[in-house]
Image (cartoon, rainbow, N blue to C red):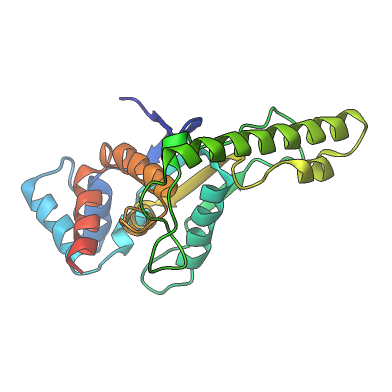
Length: 239
């Protein structure tokens, strides 16, 4: 199985580690009866369906996954806002999320930036203050790409000049165009929290770039928890 999938032009999601299987929530739910399954049966699948359908989500918190993610800062910050918010919403999040991100205070590796191709720029939506609409004209798209590439080039030159002249890394990074710059982080979360993230970020009105990452997370996690993740997301669709 490929545990690393590329996303966008330079990004990726890598499944680093997993604790548990579809049996994990089953056995967690049955512990009060001092029962345990050794292999997944139809009876166990029915229990998973029941737990997800009825909102008994605590058994799904015993299954854990750890990801390494490399994404533009605009994706990382939207992802992080979800993590912070979910932990304070009753019944939707849990305290098992962990997040550790690379920082340009400490590293000076070559910056990498997300630059949409000419056909990837989107128009503003007609009836909303956020999100995006249809693709814009490719003629302007080419000009937008060229302008962004120039902006990145100038920012990199200023950043390099500052570093070479003794400016500390934590201040030199001010010269870098921020939102398109790739950052790397580790995200560890319970299966319930992952399902909640997917339910939010797979929606058609989610930002296209974070949708791409959510689809990748789904591909990686459903290979390990095909029944549980399917039922948790089905519950969202039925709501």
